[in-house]
Image (cartoon, rainbow, N blue to C red):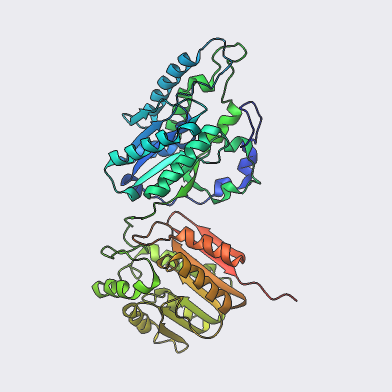
Length: 471
């Protein structure tokens, strides 16, 4: 357990500003996904919700999303040495402040006070888990359409850690999504701590920032002194509140176990009607059916999203030309044509024979370009390459197959060669992985130098370079 008090100076916000936290990737949840999901916001004490997730809550309200709030304690132990206010009086005061703050974020929100003791949530885990289950059931939604919003499980405060841990258990057990918001972490941790580097950022609009500021100010007993007597001091001083006056909020994100995102037209997500499947062996039959219904089911040739993404991918390749290129999952060959023009020899492979037929026609004017019907990683072409492109295909593999794919890449890519990865960042209907997971697995397994990274809400593009042999 981290040892700190609210009186500690902690890490200054200027230090966090210099750390790169403002450049964290954006949370890959668009307006449609947020609006179609029920959110259960968990607060250990009144003010946690405003500090850590007030902007998110304001956005959810603006989008018409369902929001339910569970307040575990009244925070009656915030001023244990107060000469002016008893814990009972403080509990009543803080509950009124909570209701006022919530009214600025989600007017008429449904909320429930659990009445658990401040400072001892760890001893009431079963009650917390039961309340989460009841709230989730009350939404009437499928488990993967429910997201828990809870304190970061390693926030350093005993109640935050206990509640965050319980939320993580509930999410894992039921398949809910999980957003963890840090509060005290910003005080005791520092930029050298690696935890925050994997978190995501939710940019806030001016209206959302204003709603959050008003909600934080409503917790008067915490942001102002109860009196001028010792023991009634300000609990949340301005230096600490600066961490929550940013133009964004920060979350650790765990997507639902069974994702069911509805992608916008022209993105690389699963087209409507594609049944659930979970491994590479299923790909040929599934994608052949998709291509039988439409020659261009992902709108590769007409969507500006796709045109722009291809241009960025091609511009990110560090080499002007390559001796031998390999594209895994070429689909109908729209990217293949432009890749092949920069390669002395080029091979495009795909598990769908229907898609591959379209790719072959697009490449037939390029003598050095070939196509091959392969299901990776079980099948793999012979030879070596100095360019391998894996675009919008990694999440159609199981985790074990993805690891095997990177083993194949490592064995096949020449020293100094380029691996280009590009994937949609939203959940893929019926498949276990998503784009962020694919890229994280590549970095973790290969440990290659990162030669370029571009990330926005909808997709991530990354260039890795195979190591040169030691001299």
